[in-house]
Picture 1 (cartoon, rainbow, N blue to C red):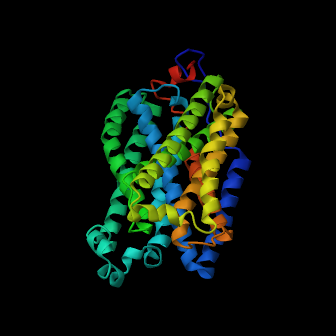
Picture 2: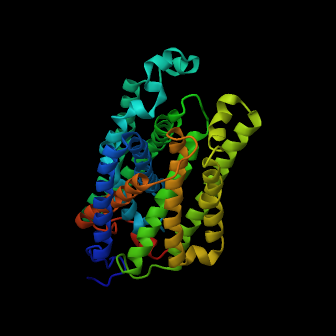
Picture 3: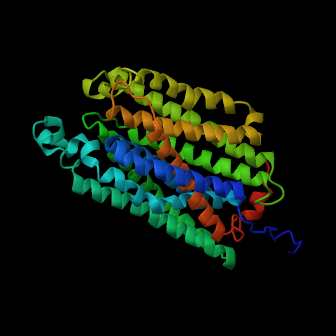
Length: 396
């Protein structure tokens, strides 16, 4: 290749074999356990299916959010790594498929699907124009459709730019991103309300959508960070990845750990202060039986440990620390979704088991398989992006 300063010395390579093998192994093992769970305990499996859907949706739409954020902010430091988010975002295409197990068991999951109960319940009757199966189905299709459409349009322009080097494609993506932001805010809010908050249809929280958003973008950034650092250590990007790049990832992780904690505490404080029975019931349910220990553990797992793990400046620049904390945050997000979902299934004596493990393995494997599929077909670096050189040379 040319040694010109305007030319990027990047060579496309196959992903590490152990990375690929682990992804397929987790996918197959998880799929076997998921199928088995459908026959052993269909109801518990259906609730775990909700967890699977919400976790994978977090990685997909969260990655799309970070792509859009780069275009709108004009950030350059993240440009060399944007394809990682683009590859992760491809899981949006499989969301309709992984939603099917939970969707076909809605009657076991959602209390508001029981017409005889709705007719005898004043609150559910009032919510019936919104909480009904046909409208629920339409909303889910529309929300996922919006995410897939904008993902396809934005990443199509990004791929095309590799060969054309056309800067107008960047401008098009900026315009698409500006249109997507309000649609993203509405869709992710109502998606969380539909699939998570409506598990307890008598309960409501006006901040719940923001709560799910905070966990979503944090989990997506954790997945992006882990893959970027891992592949960068193996020379899959370019020469010159510096601690300055790592610090930006670490700072975002640290910032959104605090943002999640702020939103979580705000939701709790407002409900505690108002002390309304229709609001407090959700937290009281998570303070009974074994769920009390889960609630206490969530504070440590999702906030205190990652907070102190990323607090120091050297921690935000350490590849080893970033990889560990990224995996920890992904676990914390899955734990959070379980905490939001499973009390509806079992109020008191719940203990996670092999069914939840199977769905977790399937989620990990699915994400890695999709990532590998995209990486095998496309450049890992957006070589045609006009900001790429400045991104490589980025220094704090």
